[in-house]
Image 1 (cartoon, one colour):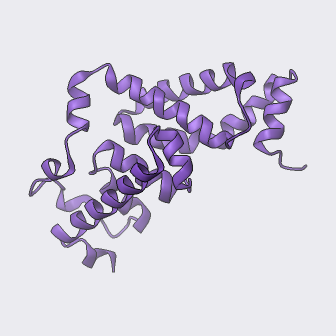
Image 2 (cartoon, rainbow, N blue to C red):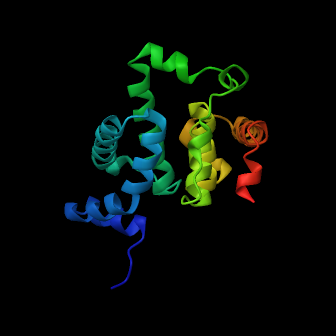
Length: 188
């Protein structure tokens, strides 16, 4: 059986084969859920927002313009839904929006964060979790999900230049974490 592209699945769903939407759910649920868990820091909220995001995508599928990839469009729905949940709790927003310089304090990272049984990707993802939400998001979308800078700028609704700057600052912050805590020795 030929693997259907996102566009073929969307066309099938809009023609009335609503069960085909499950193919899109299977294709994007894991990455979107992982992204939501990192943004919301709560698995139950992430599950709820993921379901809501798929429902929004399904209900808006007729409005999908093929100008961007479906994944970019869907990640934008996921991102905006997560931001709505975060904005419901002002204290959480203030906590997440603290600048990088103010956020990192000596001893903020548990020395037991890395164990030899974990692979390098899990280790790096734990370090990324130490970044402020926007920095963690841009890093995950670029390195883990493989989105282009242009796609990330659309998902986050920021200019391409700001996306590049944010990714650069995120890399520097991640490097600073590694250097500050001598974690680079553990990565070798």
